[in-house]
Length: 170
Image (cartoon, rainbow, N blue to C red):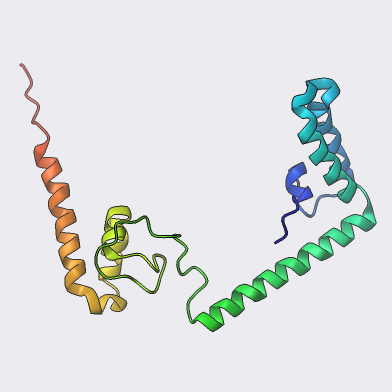
């Protein structure tokens, strides 16, 4: 999508809002953000409100904006579908973002944590390792997963044992 602010979000309205709703919302927000009322603090907000009103307050401009936004959304969806087709991976592959560092173990080339090592995942999301261990995709590193999961279990049970037992004085 483009870098321009969405006038619907600026005014806090749904895309299906009527012209009367747009006008009413603009006036409500303008009364609370106008620099004559709140001083210099409201200047940036008022500029954003005016820019949104300039687009949505005019039927022709609103129709042009809606058409352009729909075209951008369709183009982005098509680009995402093309990336998925050409990469062979679902669009959410790697959605966890870049790995946090301190790599250790096998690096995954698929799924939510694509590009992360199993050690990085163990420190960040141990539940994912448990889930992954039950999947057929994990066959090549079953032993490594079992070791990591055992270490995590030992750590969590050791922490529970390290807690002092409370004794009540009665």
